[in-house]
Image (cartoon, rainbow, N blue to C red; front, top):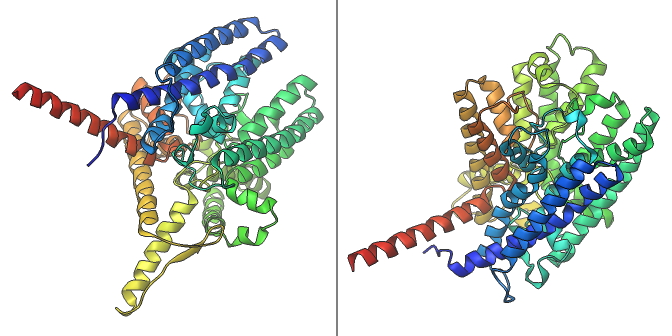
Length: 510
């Protein structure tokens, strides 16, 4: 029997959402300081005002529960599910007050896109937005890539109630360290270390290309955050094309690939356990999957009259493919070039690799390589079991930081995630087709949203219908949480409504 949410549960959930909103308000100090340092007084006023709203609302929600206690699993799942929308809604306020967004819905769309590391944007005149607004957008990408709950836990915002329920509800089932708080802090420290090093390298490249020091430092940091967090967001409207630099593209490809690898596997390499890395089921699946799809992509792309030269294929083709496979969303092609230069077959391949995405426990989105590997291994072992004698006992194992047995629950979870992603891809595509868009473009766009891949074919614009914006917001949100968390919350909410309905009916009879 499904249990319903009680009034006490709702108070607990609201309390911890309030904690996250207070954290969001405190984080707005970063763009506020950036605005002051850049003499951007209008943005500074917006962030000061928005900070006040976040702190006021968050503090009021925190007071709904005063007594200490530990979150149970169902409460933790609800906190994680609603955090992405509640935090994004507050984070959109300073953007909505700027002249670069036509409506609050547009600002909310961009805010959700940033936090879910999708990276698509419907901002107006992005080349002339303030440094403060850019800083806030990339801070959102970092917080979303690392995980809102992970970042909050690493700062101790949940206090002693932080446990594996909170950590796992954000799609991270594996611990780098025995304690989840220590794991969260490792993720934060390691990601910051990579970003700092990459920022220095990218800033140096920007300086070599003639940028002034302050601008080069900002662009280096923003690109490093977006690359490693597989966010795909850039400060310029022409994305990576703006830099006209093979070196920038090379550094970003390394960052994208690193970001699509599980933090658990990266920690194993840091400990010197390199052999286990190459035996890992996700790594081997990635090598086979990416190898096959890259070969097909090159063959398909070579049929284009504008991309037959080897240097063009190696540079533009490889960068676009890695950006899609890691669900980053960087591009050296405009949306018009993407649909006009690339054959429809190449676009479908990009959609396929985006739909699968990177490793579980990484910053990448999509179905995840581990789920694909588990489904494939389960199917193979099922066929092998059918061909085996009745007396044979089939035990399926795989290697992922040690030898593991493949259980029925793990297969069921992988199949559920796979099925829900496919359904969401199809529904989003049908909504796009219903609004008059080309089928291939609608499929690619829907996959880009739900997988948090971010490579747009041009459908995502400020002028697109409001229903499509809402649909894409839902896809980005559901895809980031990998559906399991949302399904659990949905069942609990339905159970709560049904219980109240039955209670009301009984009172009416009496």
